[in-house]
Every structure is written in structure tokens, then in C-alpha cells.
Image 1: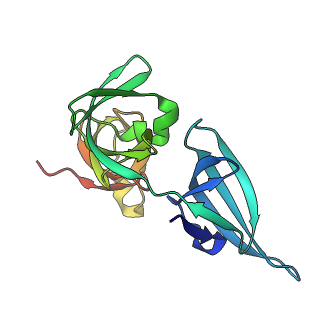
Image 2: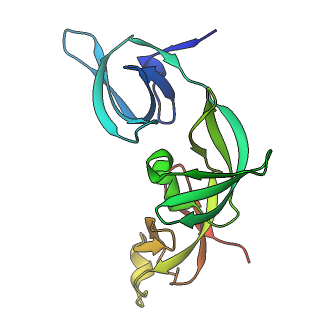
Length: 190
């Protein structure tokens, strides 16, 4: 039995079948028009090709919700452009391309346990844990008085993720990052 959702159910992370493909909703916003009905604008990523589109839908449009089977896996290493994982059930190595992984590549660290998102026997992407520990590869030094204004400074992790960190964080430190938002959470506990 296919589960049906309409545009009022749209939220980031929802996966739907639309236009003969499976799409992940990256962002969406609801807009009320003057006399007409409301519309929903969304940014969607095709989970088979990796391409993204911006699309408007009429309020109340219905779609089939896609629910993936999850299989436990572990990230092993990067092989050229591709990423190699170990299926934790069969212990087989599985190679995925950056197109399938999308922004998840910025959170992959050795031995990270993830879940494969499987639909009709095909891996459509991965499900990351809610937070990961990354090493700060580059950030400018803090200067005396910087902390008075609050805020933060730009930083880049060893995986290539750009984020804002507090002024006290230095190059080489380990920090915990939220994989859903890409935001700094805290210094990693030693």
C-alpha cells in the first residue's frame, strides 16, 4: 500500500515520487496567493541522477511518499572520486559515487556507521547519524577582544565542510557538527 502525501506535508528530508523519479525535498516554503490558492515552492534533488531542480506545486497536490529500507553500513575510504563502504550484514564492499551521496560526502570520516537508503534493491543514498566529529583543517586565529561581540569565525574541516565556529576554536581541534544543518555544536570531548 503506497503512502500518499500532499504539499502540506512537505518538509526537508521527505522523499517523494514525482515525474517518474524519486526526489528528496531539500528545502520548501509555502506561499499564500492573493485570490488564488496557496503554492509550495521547493528545491528537490533527484536521488538517481543527483541533479537538483526548483519547482512550484499547487497546494493540495498529492504524491506517493517513498519509504526506504535501511541497511547498516560503515564508511571505509575514498577511492579516487568514489567512496567505499562495507555492508555490515554481508560484509561486501559497496562503492558509491558523489552523485548518489550528495552533501553527505562532507561528513564522511573513517569507520563512520551509516545506513544505506535502499529502494527496490537499489541504493539511493545514505542516512547519516545526527552528528559527527570532524577536525578543523583551517580557521583564522582569534584576536584579543573578538569574543566580546559574540558570533564566530569561518572554518573548514578536513572533509571540506565550511562552517562558522566560535572564536576559541583553533586549527587542528576536533568539533561536533550537526549533519542536518552543517552547524557547529560543541568541541569534541577528549
